[in-house]
Amino acid sequence: MRAEARSFKSLADETRLKILWLLSGTEEVCVCDVIEVLKITQSKASRHLRYLYHLGWVTDRRDGLWMNYRLTVTSGSPREKLLKLLSEMLAPQPEAQALRGQLAHILEAKQDSQFARGLKPDRKKSPQSLPET
Image 1 (cartoon, one colour):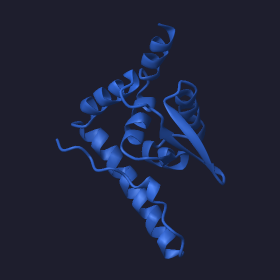
Image 2 (tube, one colour; image 1 turned 90 degrees about the horizontal axis):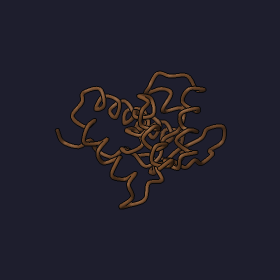
Image 3 (cartoon, rainbow, N blue to C red; image 1 turned 180 degrees about the horizontal axis):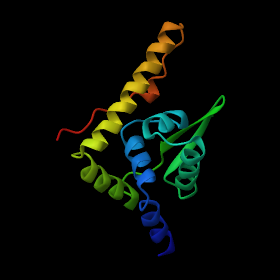
Image 4 (tube, rainbow, N blue to C red; image 1 turned 30 degrees about the horizontal axis):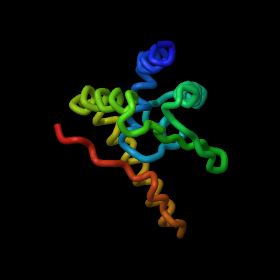
């Protein structure tokens, strides 16, 4: 039961809930994007992402100076059920919708910037559409 308690404890923090909400709406998120959307410091974002990493919620990938994170929840697992419940609870909330909208705007601006510089846009980071409310 210790692992289950740690999973629930990981959801007991508003910042981690917001991070999981953002990650559940896109394939991968850079720490820099989390910082910008949530208006938190780099150390706070990294600390919470590391916490989620050590509990198995996310995996990371280095891209130059930045770390990118994605969910590692397996289909049919209890964590997937928790994420689904989290999504059902947050989807109708204006604050949660605004966070996803901000992330979508940031990711679109990054793709536009890469396209303008002649780089291939990173399609892995395109956000999923918000659920209808």
